[in-house]
Amino acid sequence: MSFTGQPKRIKIFIMIAALLVSTNLKAAPHSDFQAWIPVNLNVKLTDQLRGFLEFQPRVGNDMSNLTAMMIRPAIGWAINDKATLWTGYLMSADSITPDSDTYLIENRAFQGFTWKDTANDKQFIWEVRNRLEERFLPRNTDPSIRWRTRLRVEQLIPGGSHWSVIASEEIFFNLNNNANNAQLQTGTQQNRLYLGVGYRFAPEFQVESGYLYQHVWKNSPVADQNNNVWMTNLNVNF
Image 1 (cartoon, one colour):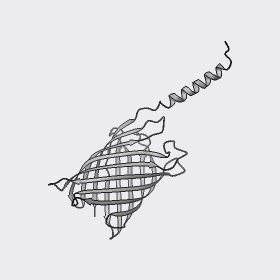
Image 2 (spheres, helix red, strand yellow):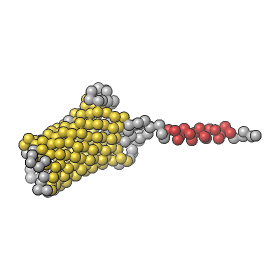
Image 3 (tube, helix red, strand yellow):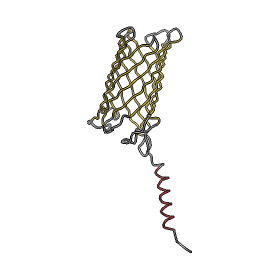
Image 4 (cartoon, helix red, strand yellow):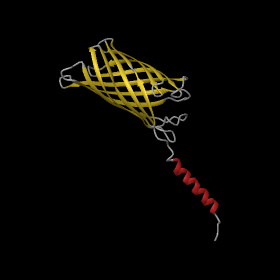
């Protein structure tokens, strides 16, 4: 019996086996319980000019550490009473790990378009929001380009117009590859599904609170991220 070429075959077999095993080594998704508290200020500056400012802290690592702090100003131009064009900027400080007190700064430019309309005698409110983002991240020389689309619906509760039920779905797509970050590659990046209730104290002031499920896709071997978020929005409109 000849064993000629056997070491080579064994080497090839080991390489194939290692490749097959590596494709199944991705860990189970990591989960975290978080609280997000966006404060949103909307201002009608003129008949067409709009101003927007958001301040949003996020507490993560199972509600034990401030993991992000964001500020997001924007200017909008109302095409009509339903459609508005937006351009703005975001600065975000994000902890390098969920339990860290060291934060990295992301600068982000964005452009957007919103369409907001009503139905059923203004008892049902729906909005589509689209954003194109240019993310300037730490340790990355090139911007990461991302597209996000959100559908938000709100149903006023009959007999109690101060209360409403709110749901939204938002999906994020990376539009380019980043050579310095394996997790910033072209494709679906995350999804957010939200269900909550709102209470309008006055036409200018609303509080809404509810559950948001966030799934962030990661490239192997890094595990995907599942975040269970309790989100409370404070919305002020002038």
